[in-house]
Length: 136
Image (cartoon, rainbow, N blue to C red; front, side, top):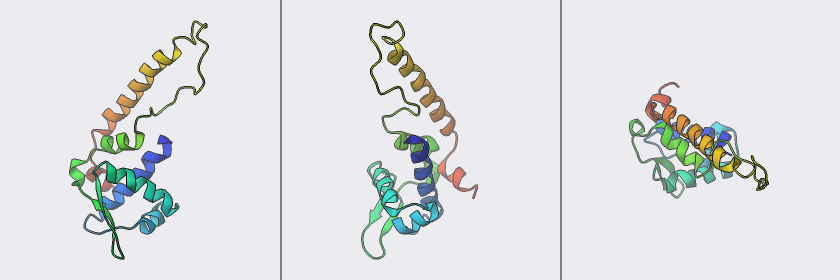
């Protein structure tokens, strides 16, 4: 769910920005988040596939940022966490097509949900990962 996924990914990537020259492993990262390392590895896979981090296997392995934190906007991290979903969701059931509201709700709701996503992206695009990291 995007509500927690963004927070987890932002926590991970902020750690990586803070310790940019070190290889951090999932156990260390999980300790900071106080969650299971398996959950961290799932998010690390997403960050790796997005091109934001690199990984190294082995005893001294781990992950680290590929991009300079000054060049990563929080909006980029949000979009990675959000994926193709909207922040808010419509109903999973199919509305009644014979109802005045039911036959049009998904189309109209889709527009509103897209506007909400865009407003969040616009807000987050004004802050870099470096700026966020420097608050700690």
